[in-house]
Length: 389
Image 1 (cartoon, rainbow, N blue to C red):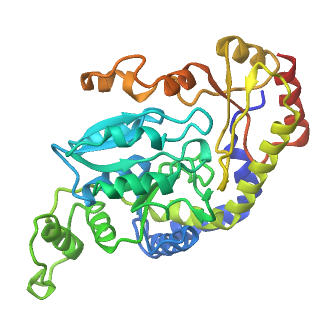
Image 2: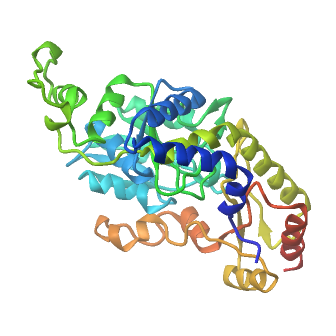
């Protein structure tokens, strides 16, 4: 079977470097945070064109911590898209806020800015656009609307590391951004890992505090900020003890570990080449897939898509997937249930028909193999199978 994704091939291409990096950490004895993490945070922030990055345990934690650092919680509302992985909306609920959903555009599948204004209330504190499938949302329009209402924008970049919007990379387009390094992502770790990126010093210090139990100077500073108090560092006295034992916020144990950071540092210099190869494969698919029973992805003007997946739509998805499997090709569905129809958000009162574009994609969306190491023969095999359906 030709898989939708394959992490083993990427590992094989960098095996010596990755093994060396991992063994260096293992021999060092420094496994939690430390210089490897600090180095990667600096590298990734610079890559994105931002000032700060905070490595955390995973992409979901990144969203939760970003929301808390922004002071968002009970009684607040946060707008996001109806078509995303559950983590986006789950994080909003986990901080005590209420997710508010809007529909997506029928071509790019990203948040529809024309639907955004109507979703705002006096309780809205943030908007989380999702750069789904590797394509940036229309951030100029989203930022303009959000900021006019005094809300911040939190980019969900879980599927879009390295994508560009009007010449700027994702993670530098909003007030703060969250990335997942789940192993299958464009930039993947060897396990769970995530990062938060921002150029806002207040949000940065808040994220630094929340990832380590709300402790230390960053915890004290953020506590004062979120409670409208003046912060005077000269009055903070740890009495010769470790700052981690002084907790000002109820935080988390969510730290990017040194092993993952070391391997991500090996991979980061290759990310642009890998993304370019994905675009090259997508261009081949775009040119050679001619079956009019399937609709091919659209790239918005000014966007540099990185094709985390190659998303299409087909009327009879089950039949198509069964046919492709017979041909030796794996397909995927991202995602079969839109957020407003998930059981965990049933109490929000949404119903089928509220977000028809997201519902249509959930019913008919399908992906075909997409990863940089696909061979020419495999690409042609996929094309032949799609065209013969």
